[in-house]
Image 1 (cartoon, one colour):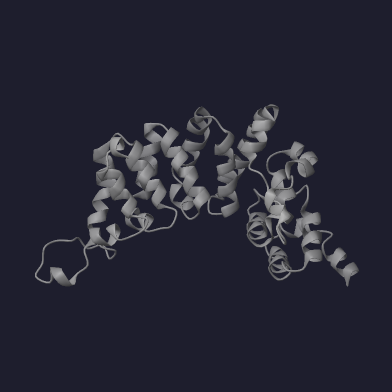
Image 2 (cartoon, helix red, strand yellow):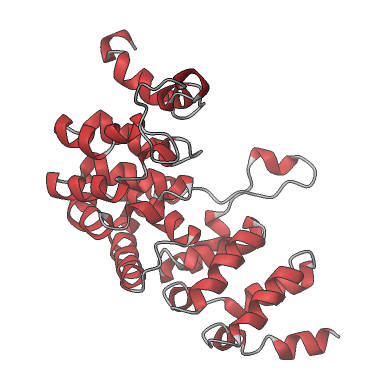
Length: 292
């Protein structure tokens, strides 16, 4: 059986790139995730292939399921490949044991890229160059809907200077902001682009959020982007027109006008005030920074 598994995994990387064959790999990942031997074989056969698969129109689907299904300890060497070829040589050094490893059944966590760059500043420039190349290819392939791509974008913002975010990331993501708000990592990237982007890019991001302000505020992660927009934008007229005006409408798109049966209809504002996430917007707008 082990021999058969090895033969099946020989050309695994190539299968990931084929339109119909990649479905076989997806099933392998889904149903073999609890088998340690299978996990090791799959990871082994995908090594040195991640930079190609991560930006491939078909292979990216395999990468998405791989990182979402397999434990982070197993996929750590594959993730390191996305940072640059030099990281494969330091995989054992980059993943040191942590305090949690002393606990039973605990797996060592992969330290953040920013933490590694802080102790190895000479790796900053080659890492930024490599990440920019991968991210640009991914943006050209419209991979902004994948969670692993959001994580990669966040890794870039963690080591990039504000000028790099302003010149490279903000213009590239300004029209894809809505796709990024589905995850916490993607939302944090949008917040960075709003904070460091120029006026033109900020307006594009706000236009992307138009019509989704209410749903974003009620989302577990996306509300952060609305908060950051209201916090840093100087054009209050634009923010009110594109985002805040929508808050006076209910989820069905109807306004909260005075009617005879007003008491029977829920208030669109009250719905937000009672929300754990949306209520933070009112705290931001009503509480001055001096009182914080």
